[in-house]
Amino acid sequence: MSVDAPSDYPPSWYAASQPLPPPRAALQGTARADVAVLGAGYTGLTAALALAEQGYRVTVLEAERVGWGASGRNGGQAIVGYGCEQDTLERLVGDADARLLFDFSRDGMQMLKQRIARHGIDCDWRDGHASVPIHPRQERALRADIERMAQRYDYPLEWWDRARLRQELASERYLGAMYDAASGHLHPLAYVLGLARAAEAVGVTVHEHSPVLRLERGPRPVLVTAQGRVEAEFVVLAGNAWLQGIAPELETRMMPVGTYIGATEPLGEARARSLIRNDMAVADVNWALDYFRLSRDHRLLFGGQANYSALPPPGLRASMTRRMRRVFPQLADVSLEYVWGGYIDITRNRAPHWGRLTPNVYFAQGFSGHGVASTCLAGEVIAAAIAGQAGRLDVFERIPHGIFPGGKALRMPLLVAAMSWYKLRDLLG
Image (cartoon, rainbow, N blue to C red; front, side, top):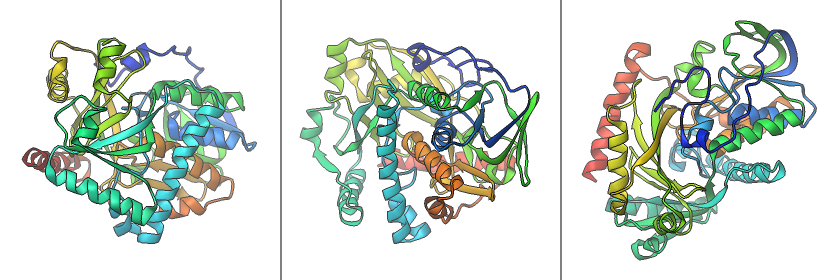
């Protein structure tokens, strides 16, 4: 398992199951563009694609490979909404803006599906996502959420009791499910590679192995690498958890968190389908959650084991296997063939942190483990703002964001202590 391969894609089932393109050339010398983008993940490539389709000259700089970070390693679950609950957004920005933000998220999900179809991206999209409770308290909260989302947001969610859930999911662990037919799951690396091909087809230039060393702000901002520089009218910072030393005022409001995923050996179609009959994605609602789905080659992909420190947890493969078998005891004879991980970026309130550093430097971060759909929305929102339609970005900028306490030395230990309390609460129900 690797989260830190310096020159190619980290080992994962995603990388093993997907044809990987040859490396793109690193930036050499001085380039000029209308828009320079830091980061070739979902946000950066979506913004680049949307801007190039409107006639902008766009250059994207990627420190490693396209999709090397969270965009190519995540759990693949694309869910309407954000990393925080809607009641959090109501407290932060009021009911009217919270409704706007949720509607933007619904639009973003449609944009994601339309982009896959329009560009012919083969990324194994599947419909359906279930949030599943373990404790009665969680069941009550999910049932209340369904009623609230229908009444306040006109968003249809279904409650499945335990018997209905067992028709689709072969696990006794859960008390029921909140089912969302509009959400779903995909092959994350295949999707980001397809985005890159679509962007390049309309003229976007992508440079890999071109880590940005600094941002020079001013009337024409510049992204500087070891071997070159891109001068532009606008800059988009889309480095998320890997944005280090470029914009310190962003780093204090974001924390990298490790998360890990395993893939079983191939189970065969019949056995795989016996686990999740309708091919939906599933996640429990613990703070330290488990999430899982099936792959196209009939494996179980099982994720979780979030780690709020800088190091992968010890005995990762064994602990992931135990968690998987707790959900599916019938997999007692099945091992995890792949285990991999990476970093997501969280904000203190788990709400998205998107906006402008200066009138010509834009950013998006803080997807808080809920980024497959919302990162793509962020790219569209930033592209629209650069093109002169900033209304949606203005709403996101009204979300207040505090810094993580403790500075660089103490903010991680303080977060670890806080998360230990939430994990204990999960155990106690």
